[in-house]
Length: 154
Image (cartoon, rainbow, N blue to C red; front, side, top):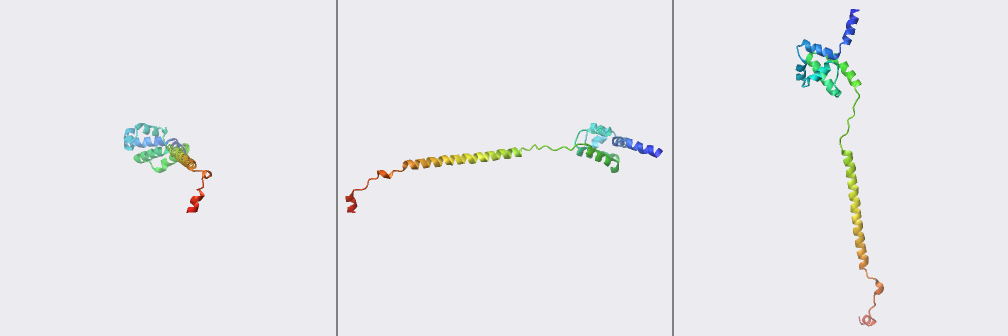
């Protein structure tokens, strides 16, 4: 029965408590761990109280893994927590802050407007040249035949 109580007691001890106990056994403060991990001591305190900060899982996993390595906690003891934590937090979809699609649409619109403008300019040029050529033609109906004497002399 005492084995069952010990097993229940081990399940009650959270990962944060384990890390805190191991840190205290080594005689390290939260500030020491924070300095080694290059973090604020508030994050270490949140990890030890199992109040995981609202930051991406990648960072939390890395912080806990590094913290566990410093205090000597085996990976078998903290990896189930990381697995549970990764399943609890909803996956975030990255927003696309790129404006490539807007640039593509704008680029296509500018391209087609340029083509239309060139076609209109060519059409106006062709029409004005055609109109000028039509105005320069002389109608043949006003043609006067040469006198018959000039034709016979030649």
